[in-house]
Length: 94
Image 1: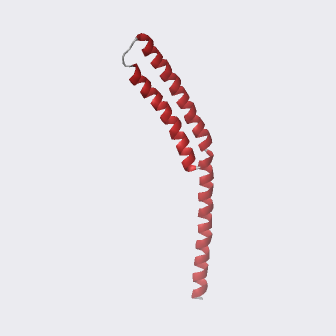
Image 2: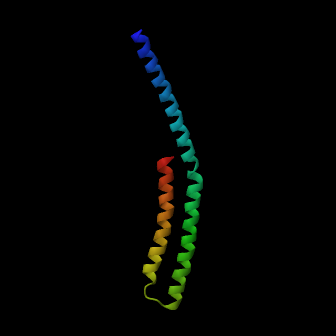
Image 3: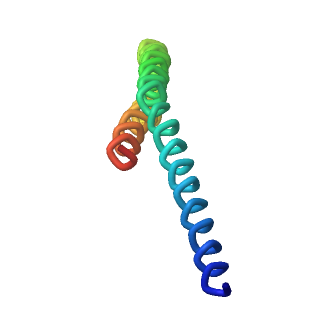
């Protein structure tokens, strides 16, 4: 009788583990479904940052500001960081 009770307890734990595994797999598929739109969004943000940076650098350059190279490096560095970070995150998680 005791052996039957132990087997029933083990069987219920195995069913619970199967349901947990299914939940983890479902959560993984949901999260990976957001990576394509997320990376495209980050690429779009990088493009907007690059355009804004280009306008800022051009306005500083045409006005003769001596701080143009620092501004160019910071804006385009931010743009490159966004693109590289999105690519690395995508390759790391997928």
